[in-house]
Image (cartoon, rainbow over all chains, first blue to last red; front, side):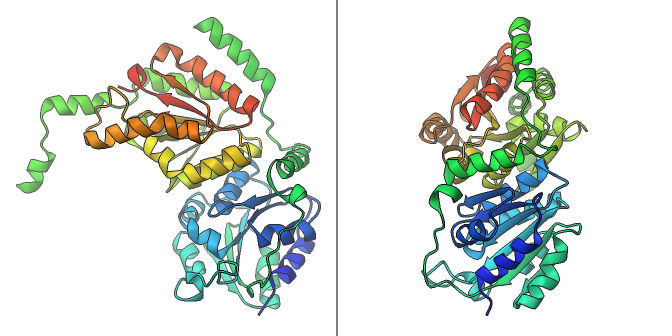
Length: 210
Length: 191
């Protein structure tokens, strides 16, 4: 069975500096922060929030590839978000679910038994989907999807980690990570920075109107 | 015969239901102010009191209108868009805020995502939308304590004359505070 680290290391080699990475807690965050040290990453999305956050980011940057690196337990907390992806169909959103079929070291998830996450994604309206079990399949499906119209969804079967991965806490979590992300994306020419000057002018106008 | 009896409502109740939506003037003010503020991504899960607003937004090509299937998805989606620099509003009600508490805590308190929430103050005095009084009372009891607990700054707007300034100020505040900010619509604005 594949290791999550090996898949993410390969993926990091395929992304460019303009692609966004959004990661779920916690193994995806710990590994991704190590293998993709440059470029815009927003990391540490808690249960159920990785895919919808990435969906929002893809609405802000419709011409850039946004990669949601989710996990089985997190996605199953909010499979409803796939319906929104299937409905809105952002063309540059790539969802990769690292499915270790367990809640970390706390027992199996439903995907180890009867739940088929790819079928759920397809049923939600996402047309480009695959279940990946080998490194060759990972490269065959995921690598081209980074540069093809989507959205796309990949269920990647990986072995469960036996130890907890945490990563560099100061770099990958909370406000420090956010500040680094904003600093990176605000340099992009298509960043729609909130126009403070215009809003201040509008506020003054509203006051005079009232 | 049975279904007809279910559909039949006294005229007075029908009139109350028609009043229990944002009126055309309030809708116009909100849309004009959103445009003035450069807010062009509107996310919602439709609900009765704000339906006239979200329906008008969906028909206006200026806006990208996204209908989500649950409010947690909506809040997280707004956060992603807002932290990506897009001016974004989530339109919902008290029930939606209750459903989205996990996402709000994460996107507000943990990540400080700057976006605006426009919520009908369901259950506030004057709500005659026809839902059971026990539900209205629950909404009234939880609404403001919920926002306070989640550290979401909010403002209650009950007059159309204050609506434009409230939107402008709350939009400024969400960026200035770096957190979601809620506008709670009630009174003359809704019913």
